[in-house]
Image 1: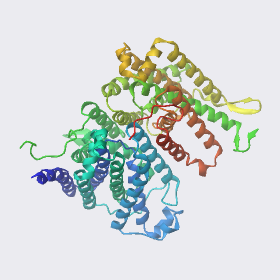
Image 2: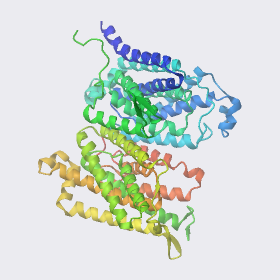
Image 3: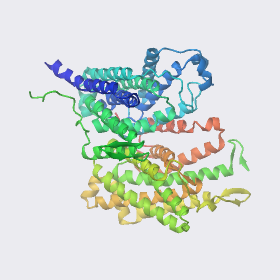
Image 4: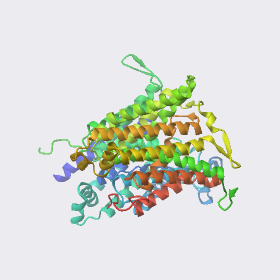
Length: 334
Length: 301
């Protein structure tokens, strides 16, 4: 019985992802991009949840692992013949090789995880504000290095010529993989211990949990998933250093906060709800009509609306739309 | 006349000092609010940006310089009070991390509002441009703004320390940043102290806006964003909890980046952000309370 109850916590998020993918499959091709993008965002936000939600420690740095994953997958999948045009200063090791789609995604996840482990080794000793600022520093450093280090990527250029293999189906599969991993982690011994340290670090230590080690494990797994999401992202649209920097950090954190940071259900609901709103506003910025009203919003409205929404949720309902609770088909007492 | 070893000339040194002075003011502005609210205001740069747009509009309308500066102060102070009333006050008592995320949202919000009103290309503030002309001091050309920035920053810091050390409200503010609850129990009015801190911090943002627009007359929606990020790093470097260490941290980081940026070749100076944030992370790990403080570490595990 307990296992059945637990499985419904996976059922809700997974069903929502599949539903989004199915709706995406029947809309026009131009609108399909919004759904694919939303599913990649689900993967990023679920990766964020795995660390932030379970540990209660803020991280502004996860988009660096998305960026590193995007760079890995991007560099490895640009056809050899096109590499000199986009990345003239690429290191020799990377210049003569390309991998297939799955290979590039796996390597993106691997590199994301290794980076998270290396960064986490010193940083996981920090909490609260210090952790927020330090992880922000990681984002700044990653952005700065990727921008100017042309041996590992296009530098200031945009990743063009990356095969656009992140279709609706692949994005949905990717999001499902991330969700299943996040679910399994949260149910595991490690997830429980980490949540114990979130609720009461002293008590958790008293029962033998190492706060540092638990956080490091979660940070690394979260980095793997973020790297994978980054790989999906670079295969979706032409990425450059600015598209995996402050704006993406803002929108994904907003998604997590709006949905409810302490549950997987919250992460998925938040990602899809904010994506829906954001995409609708993006369409409206180009002019659309609703119930016969012609709507033509000026550029920039999206961020304003999402920003106000995020501030309102933080003030009025700090635990998010879902209250930070997991999905349940029937109430706990039944 | 050069410091030949480091390949730094006096002009670079003067400009770095001015940048340090401006960053020190921003650091005080961020530190004051952090002292009473335990809130890191990520949206501080957007206050500066608002002031800069006020100056740009005033110069576009052909207003005299003093009227532009008045408009700049009025708009920045109004905006900071609004920010306090609408966002900071409802969030009071939340964890510092939640408040950091909230001000992160406010920063993006204000930046998009500016984008909406003024467009991505921004506006040009020209009314104070004459301050960019150099004067010759013992054979070295120094821009007037450099001298003005250092003098104004020093004046502000002196005025502020007199206020904090010699007046009742200053005493209340210092007490509140040491222990807010106890200060309240002893009769310090929370709203008045916080309001004062927010106002002072806003006034400093307006001063910074004036000086930054002289140096960079093109005002865009992301004006002062990079500066704020670097100053935040400086405040952490110096030590968040106390005003003087925070100021020193702000000055040090402004001076340091100014000096390195002016003396290193581009292919090295482009990596300055990495050095700066690497240093921040190192300090957070080794001395979580900051470089210029003693005792009381930040919470850690």
